[in-house]
Image 1 (tube, rainbow, N blue to C red):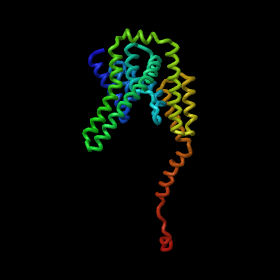
Image 2 (image 1 turned 90 degrees about the vertical axis):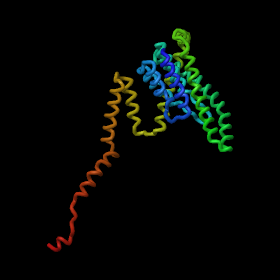
Image 3 (image 1 turned 45 degrees about the vertical axis):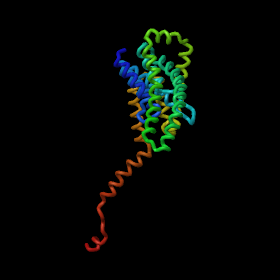
Image 4 (image 1 turned 90 degrees about the horizontal axis):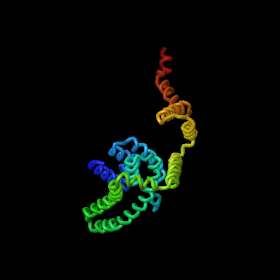
Length: 269
């Protein structure tokens, strides 16, 4: 790994750490973070595949009240580095990411607890009207979040590939296989939460049909996407709701084309 790659990886780790609390650029999402790491390490395909898989898992991870969700930032960055550098499979990467997300959850709770002191300091500066002091407290808190991902990433980068492979191979198969199964369950929970939020019961047959086609055929994602597009077009053509709108436009146009007939013209004739 070159010096430039190490610097870029630390920058990406810092951005994902800050993005986990900012939520504006969504840089902490697995699909973004894993893709960037894969691009830096020269294996963007593995980064996209691993990021897409972890993204489905992360759909079921969210903060509810005071309950902290597993950390997607540290899981995405470090798992992608380990998978690409040690030539592990995506399944192994999922197992690593689940363990890292749990560890990152404890770490982010620790960092957010530290930032409570900064919040109280910001309140003190606000009472005094010190805008500069408030900005410094906010930036310092963001730096803590950046270091939360940068330091573990740096430690992983400093380890040799042989040491990492030895550590990963020493993990019992029952543990990694169990984490893979748990990750698959989380993916299903994420799908269920999204469907529950959409609450479109009329489209559920298409949802189940997609699962059946994917399970009993050898179609790739491009073929499944094409089938989905064809199904959407057929649904719009056959659904009376859309037919009523399409028929209303020609009818109104036809009414507008009828010439005005005046009865007084007939009397004059």
